[in-house]
Length: 88
Image 1: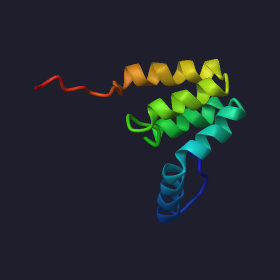
Image 2: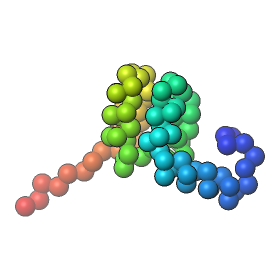
Image 3: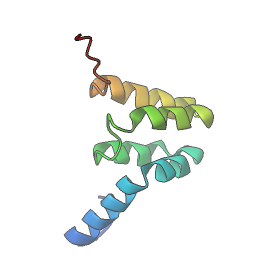
Image 4: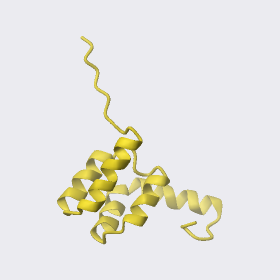
């Protein structure tokens, strides 16, 4: 599994770095149309309900319809929706 042969702590550090810089990492992979790596970011829970809207905006701006479609499918499948309260 990618990242290859990293010790547990190094892997945790790497994933934390990606999480801290998810917009830049996503932009890099989306600009290269790298759906496989973006799917890994989802599997690693680096793309989640907190950042999905911004990442959808980025993929739309890059005109990456396949990636936008993938993210929308994941958003629906994982139920990443903002919950609104209509309480008064």
